[in-house]
Length: 120
Image (cartoon, rainbow, N blue to C red; front, side):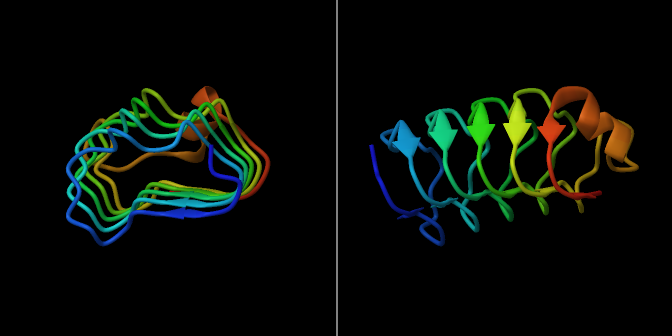
């Protein structure tokens, strides 16, 4: 468990194996080569930032994110594995989506209880 923030961004990571199971603050794994979020924390009290990776789904993402969830600029064609609840905004912009036209707000609300804005 990490009580504060956890940064593993900009490290050319291909896996989150060995990441903390719980992060009280923010978790940053952006700007890596991740194709999966398997191994990510189960809960994050603050933001979860995984933009600029090579993700095609959100399988392995935390169940609960207390702050914002940013998965923009990936190769997402599925929202499978998205968090059940996000306390801040949910940014899923700049992804191909299931039909190559991105995701809609309704797509995201169908799989996740988002308290803040949704960016598609």
